[in-house]
Image 1: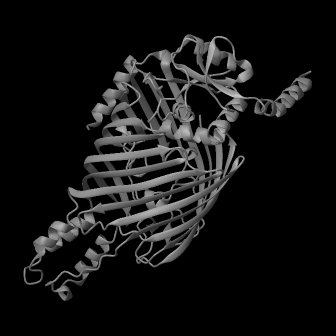
Image 2 (image 1 turned 45 degrees about the horizontal axis):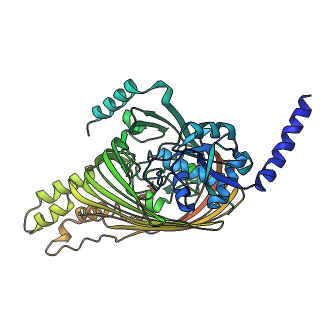
Image 3 (image 1 turned 90 degrees about the horizontal axis):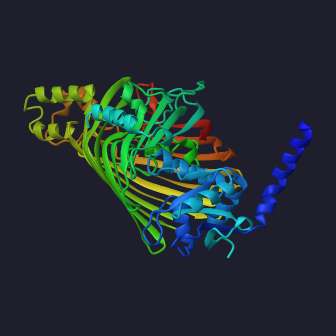
Length: 143
Length: 405
């Protein structure tokens, strides 16, 4: 039984990146946010900790999907064409030089959505298939 | 800033910290260093007293472990403390505290920090302990080996703003630092007081350009220089008539020192190109102007990055040529002055090739081979066991395993 479970996990691991890779990613906030859309450079600035504010001046809370490395990898590949290792190296630089506080981490897409629903200034990224009525798309990565 | 303030900052922060908002993180490196010279011992910077010679298998130069604690003290105020355990020559207990500051961030544009901070003299001095944060197995010694300061105590203020699609960040800082320089089997104290500095960063798309300028009062506690000064002062005027003018330039107390750096990075597909030009200048005959720099290219292929670095440091060699001095009567003193004045005259160039393997996004292995061409009398960055300083080509190898969690 344990072997079957292990094999299943291996198969899912092998095919998960492929399945996520075919899907569009969206950058989302809660439906009630006054933010309408963001430019690519604004999204990059927020998620790379360069300038963590929206165009209206409100402080942005970037939500990182740390528990889903495949989705995270795809997001940064599409956003800035860099690997997850490169992004982690970049954040290690900001964090351990004491320049920036880490972003909010969530383990799953469901937790990201729940966090966004409670925090109108929080911003996260999810596969488009996980989109629901409580969220507003502020940037599409495959457009 | 007295160290007691650092202690009070830590105590105060621990007292007010919300237990549920404590955030721990860590980083570390285990590195093996080999080198092939019998005379010149490889070291990471001029503080290190641990030279790696032919036949040595060293684990001390680049190995370290660091822990960082962040906690919110209020809506816009937080505390960051960082301890780095590593081999530090002639260390004091607080040399292992690399960060201990309170940060006030009223909005995304402004940030104020007070306490113990990382020196921001050159591009990577703020995070050179964090091996995973850069491509190479070690930062270019030609530029960074001359900086022995582990931290500074003071304050900084940063302002960031968007200009079109670009981001501009300006930072001003002030403070003081102290360190040790190991040379000729002696430890010499080096203080940097009244330090004022600034940095300007321009970040647009795949481009990043940075400019830094800092100045301060440098004081070295050097027995060799004190001895030279004493001997010059005792000389009668018929040997050295205008010795007062020279005397003031040999002094290593409160001399003006300047640090300058221009650096940049450019991502181009899978390539990362970077460069830095740096200068250290001091108003003393005992510290000659030091120009250094490097260019680097790195190519990433999946989890593997292959890179090369070409680095150089260059300074003029001092040769005693003061007018009116009867040098024939004081040959040993002239030799000592020449030697002392050339201590910081680092002259070498190197070429490195390396491989970085991102085993996981948080664990990295690196292997770097460096061939360094040391010029005659240009061995400041090395531990020299000989009586002279001949030119030599030295090969060194660094193999490291790093993490950041």
